[in-house]
Length: 90
Image 1 (cartoon, rainbow, N blue to C red):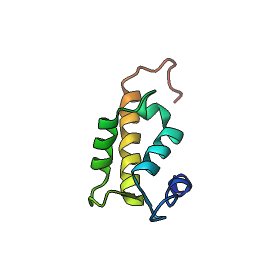
Image 2: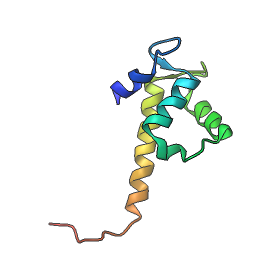
Image 3: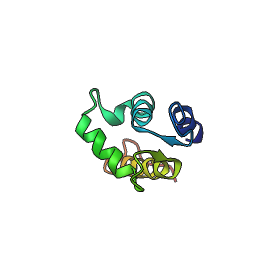
Image 4: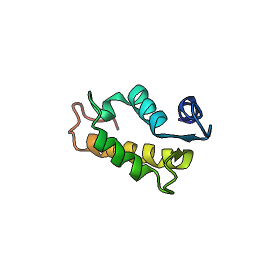
């Protein structure tokens, strides 16, 4: 999580934040299924706006962690809705 953030942050500007293009590259390369086959620009802009809680037009590590936590919770809720194919071991 940490190394992935820093792999993309700092390619341009502040090395401790993701600008718009760095965030887009991170999501495209590391979470392609999250964005789908074709990125909807309006949806990406809304995501960027929602992540950027301090409205500095960049995503810092804390904002990135909030995003990953929310994504993990959504994935968990998604899988909780599926019945087990095999009974769980006790």
